[in-house]
Length: 358
View 1 (cartoon, rainbow, N blue to C red):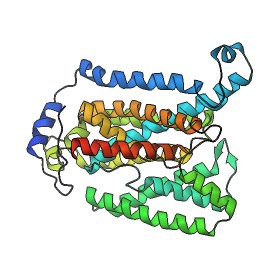
View 2: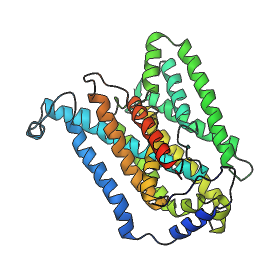
View 3: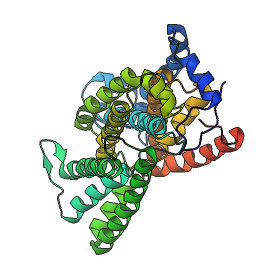
View 4: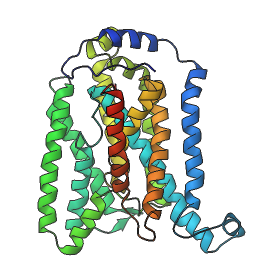
């Protein structure tokens, strides 16, 4: 495995190691190498998705499910399968968003939480709960619409705060996101303080990240955004590789920095908002999955993006399966599980690799 120490964030020049590493990745990617890394990740994801719907607090059998209408069939098709499919979409989306933000910010700790997008989404949902907007219009809860609007508002705010002329400085982008994170957190605390007991309970439940409300319509609404964004990022992967070696290095390789950074920021933000609007903020997926894949497969985004999508999907499906079975019939918010598993795992990676995560 080839690893590269994180360059200083303020430095935009290429390091010697980056020059060597990314000159190699400028070469074509063979189908065999792509298949060797992405293939196993896709198989793991498929296996998890096929097995997870059969696991739960109530036992079901495939004979009863296939026999026709009945309790087992309803549990499988209405309660578990859509939830597993949405978990896979959300996990894959958050993992790929993490890959993207770490690439354009050149910061190993960047993820959808760092840029304030998750906090903005939470703020939108909390305001909707406070105002009593709990209706469903055209199959979409107004709380979800408000959460997506909050995420989109944050995207625009961070972008316009960070933009300097035609440039989008990565340090300013990061600091703008972190600052908005704190502002939204304060506003959420104020609204929670002013809300009544039932509203406060709903707010806490939403902000802990949960997949309880996922159904087939959730999958249908979120899937087009997620799949289109991931496909677009695969098309841009060749331009993301040189960015990790520094902006000057990327520019010398013919990369249009303005176009790549602006497009990447908006695609990653839409990717995050399209799933957190339905699930609430779910932490650590966009942080540990890309680093885990990068440690094994290296920093080539042509491999990193699809491999992270599949493993992020499998990771969140496994976490959600634990969340709904570990103390069944009570279900734990999946955000609690991802934090409990992701935190120690990330610390273990840091200790083993001594910070060589980029």
